[in-house]
Image 1 (spheres, rainbow, N blue to C red):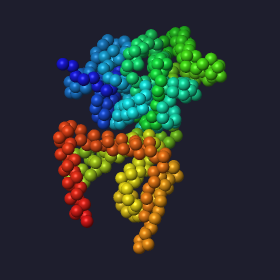
Image 2: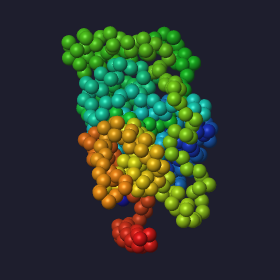
Image 3: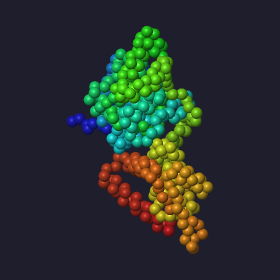
Image 4: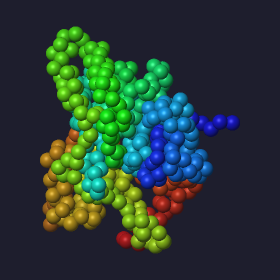
Length: 442
């Protein structure tokens, strides 16, 4: 009896990647999201990659190994597509890795917004430095024409060309028999994306970095392509790019945009889509997201339990914070304000959030300036200090929805592995413990 189909099929071509493969696979298996299959396609590796793949496949039922003779990354991806069973498709390269919230964030958007393609920001890694890379800042659903207009502005940008920062619908891929062109070794990802976009209608740009990109591809000439073959290949890709816009835009719009379309020839005149470089504001690798010291995960104590719960909540809130251009502290304060439905003094609110009064005041000012909240102050005659009631403004609604989703992911991660009865018992006992704490502090 076959197992039920997973929600996501994650496809990873593997070729001589023994030095980075474990980091890649571990980042997938250790995600918050669990409903996936991981398809490792070993492309005739001559190092220890095959043994590593077999080890993971033996240890975790979600890992499926496809062994084949060396035939290139495009054919490996095609073999993964042939074997995939998921509703959605996600791709990784074995040099790279993903964030713990990557698949969860992509699937939440795809299902919640009923969209056909989710494209996300990513991290560019160079040595020990990392920078955040994105392109589209529009909120909400984009039409095909709107997405294509953004792409036209930066036609040779990795953000649009690669597979690994996107989530695809497998039904669209299969309905139109979409596969990688194994005869093309330049912009083959981009060609697949252009063809997919022609058949998709609803797009969403997620301003959340979910992928760590470290691979730098060599030039076509260094890969063994002759100069004449390289020129022919690039002209063929440009011709396809041009035909794509002729099919997406009407004749008048295409004529107006002709110069922007031809800009692709200039921007992609090098050896491939332009790789993102380290940008201003880069950080040391390891400081860009919430990190937990491995030693802190060991042992048992009351303080350690509190620490682990706080770190897990921070990791879940961070996803919503990054998506909405908030600091983690601002996200915590918004969540605190949402939980408190009675007017509080500034000192009471500072105690609840664990912030100093000056720090809290600064964060409240920032949230107010961004048009997310309005504080209405009131003072009873017998009270020395004013109390504040928080009014959430319309701009805060999608932010609060993301924060509530973060809370749900936090609860799901905490209760992973508990059945329905165990979860109900945990909830009952938690309420009893909370009541005991209240009584003890009265």
